[in-house]
Image 1 (tube, rainbow, N blue to C red):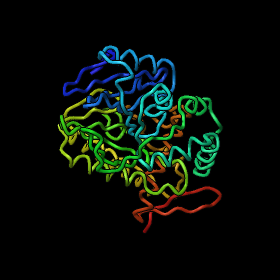
Image 2: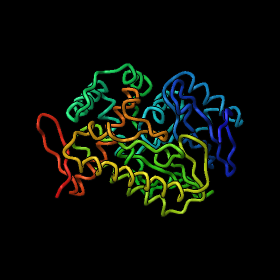
Image 3: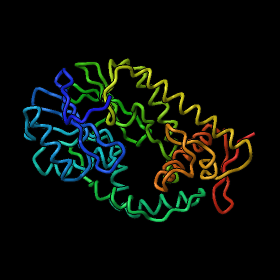
Length: 327
């Protein structure tokens, strides 16, 4: 379902506010107001621009509230479209900002010196067969974010009023979903989206196995039995298990495609990505813009490193990394 409405009342004291993402094909991110005894919790807050702040104020007004009613912001993860406005809102008087420890650590490392973080990622992609030059899009993303220290670190299984924290690493190390114990629905951030497949990338060395984490997290949220999904992008939908099964099947299919490529012999991550279809429209790699090609290579790397973590593939360095299937 597509709608241009700014807000939707979702019953059980939940209001969806569509915060703009100007120039981005996703069009908006959903902030959710959740009524508590002391006011509202805001789940995710958009990136740091004046139009997002104006939309948030307008959404609150449509709901008959002002920013003074927001007592806490819970950020599902530290990406700029979920976290960027948090510092502005704390300075405007919102008392609390909540974030998982793993994502506070991640944000502290990445956002303390974003240009250096870009340099490390660019070198990593170059070592994997995709040389990168600094881009305008990277610089723009940094302008939309701000390193803001949370007032409270949250952990798996913790209660935040009516919300139960479920740690779901993969998309980021400290991504969280939130189960609404009143309605039975789950706020899934970027962990479960429909019809978009969430991005799980491997952007720098020594990142562990983010795809393995993501698959395990998907299986976990599928087992919870939530009665509906409130995602960060797109519209709410009812069947969590159906979408979890589709995402798991997508990752399995992608793994099979990558294994098929490696059967032909050693290849760099970029060399593998060039032979795969991309997006829901199955575009050739060459038809993607350079920025999206970077994401494609990073996603391919997540699969290759997952195969390596399971001892199903090896990696060697001959001036650049190349992957091979193990015997």
